Length: 84
Length: 155
Image 1: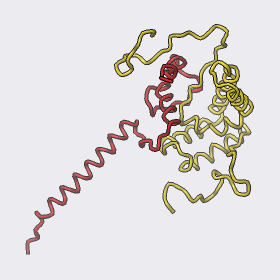
Image 2 (image 1 turned 120 degrees about the vertical axis):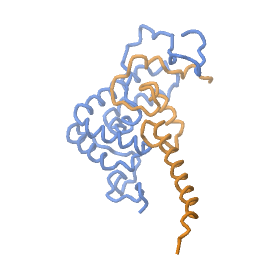
Image 3 (image 1 turned 180 degrees about the vertical axis):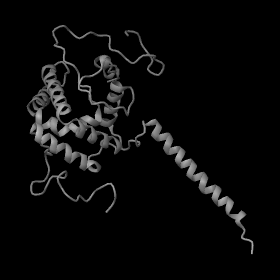
Image 4 (image 1 turned 90 degrees about the horizontal axis):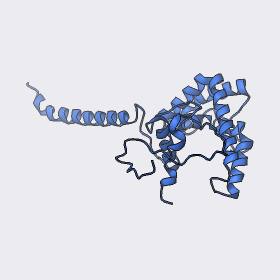
């Protein structure tokens, strides 16, 4: 007896669209974070440290274990320009 | 850069034009970012304890940035020394631990294995141990517990 396989096409389409959207979103988030998982529960301390990382390496997720800071680091802090 | 630069359209990063006074000795700033710093945190606490405490007590007296410059320079020098020593002696374990931290939202609990190797290397080569101040006295500190309750996978 012929099985109505055409009726399962919409289910297959829905599943694959969910999978594709999820994968694309995940890939996009990881690409924005240099291949690492997204950081969550970021408090003010982490915000400050990530801003410091950006001044040191150029990207908020960039890391470096170099003990000496690069050239312009000492004068690149905009902390004093912020409103009190 | 004495004129106003709108940060959203500026082509260069902000650079403070005011020069450092001539009577302030120059010390190179620490170039370590957040993850390696978090990895080395307890060793910094053990190695640079006196300088850190000096600085904090000085800041408690007066929060003006110009008041504690000398103590701040000492802290920076001590931290740079320790990071250099760590890199000379335990570079692999140090790198492994902070890379693990970066992949786990910079939290300690998923990275106990690399942490144990780092602690072992630091103890053998430099004699520094990690001690968590304020951990309950009768029990083991959380980084020494063999089977912790909270791990990456729910038990």
